[in-house]
Image (cartoon, rainbow over all chains, first blue to last red):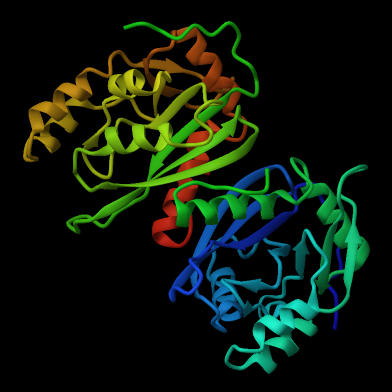
Length: 201
Length: 201
């Protein structure tokens, strides 16, 4: 797959960070998906919000629509998502997001994805083979250190070279071990659902 | 009324910035009220969310409850609110918030409050005399320049000295003419309702 050419990764590159809100297990319903437009790891410039179905298959379309109709679309350079599954096992097709939006996508996680465990969990969902294929298509996992000490984060990439992605992750991890756009999207999405943010200090 | 003694206003003082979401005129319903915990004007540490009634009288109680039950309560030093009326003319009793939470409250606005206009607008609401009295009780308006050039912002204060409040406003206005906690609370609250943030560049 082609990659976007970054001539230089600017410290104030506009990143869309994406995370979902929590949901009650065994309840059925819509879960908020929050996008934050961040200037590098420095400040928040905008917030986007849509809804996705718990254990549904609509996250790819909802995210693509949210990005495409945003007034920030023209300034965005890269999308960072917190894992590849949202609202349970609503699996994001990162290749499709790249094709439809033209923006590289970086899947960020705190732990290397445990594919065996995921496979067992999704096997009782409708259309599980399609979900599984999409997840496998997200490609190779790279470890990256965002600080000189502490735990690494893990990334899977589409449309961006590993060296450029490492720069983006490092420059945006200004306040914690994870990039600011991901940390802040998480705070907002959890507060929307629960009334107060939690996790990821 | 007594004032909190600030020995020194630290650059990373924890501020709660509060703003409401937009609502459709003539619709009746609940409007989100968003609080963001900011370290000075530097970074977001937490997000709170509650709901208030359009043109209701519950904002004082809802805000007080939201602050009191927050796990950030112990670290907070001051509350900044975007104007004194929320979700239409749900009037915040800033003195009561101060009494109940022990936290000084600063009302921030871009324009000096036009009391004649507000009086005309609230006169057809239930219990308008109470609302009016509460608004008048918010006290004197001070102008403060957050930058060496550009427009000033206006503040009304309870529980904090003017000189300390000026320091808090200036140190937190890092990205625009208004303090970051207010700017970011606005972005989140508007995105929650409309799907994308707007206003206040």
